[in-house]
Length: 146
Length: 146
Image 1 (cartoon, rainbow over the protein chains, first blue to last red):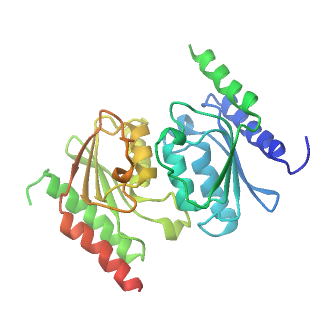
Image 2: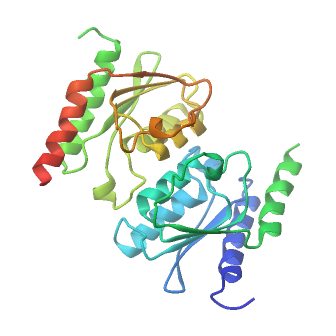
Image 3: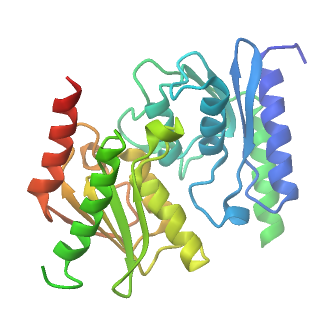
């Protein structure tokens, strides 16, 4: 896997998703990248924290802002294994993140189900990076819960 | 002001907004009420925390879940001085909050600008409680910034 490619960073996000899986959390992982450097890593932690707001993206935004020392992620790319939900898309809009790359789509809860762009107008989006493993880990998780 | 009325609890949220104002934060305050008891109080803290996700509602949701010991706010009412944004509405949807009461509308960033209900289908909404003071404090804040 080529260093600094979208596949490379999504694979790092997938490692975070695996940590969530191992912790019995819905397996979604995220990393934030600036200048080809990972400045934040996070995974879903809603069960552990008893907090619906503890999605991977939310924690990645908070951690990245802390790393940068500023609220705005205008020169950052967020990699996340699953399409962000409406809450996370709203947060990414406030953060003015430069670019979002996601793996699997979420046809139920994904922000793109909303008939209006709720991201920042300057944010670009790439989807489908490592789509298969990003989606597969979520399916495997819910299968194990039945 | 009648005890346990919407006006009463919104006034408590306004007190939180005033704390935000005094801390040089966009003055939005929130309280979460269950069984006529305030179980969480919060105000916007985005500047202090350098975190765009630190809206009053987000912190109120996290604090209320912590007070309850569960993720879901199905028997709770959130009072907030300003109409929730898309991020906060998305969080309130995940939390399945029973009822939302807000003061002033937000014609730019409010969730109701989205042409689709993004709240939980069971959530009821009351707007316009103490609308004038809830809106006035925000106007006064931005005026002081110019």
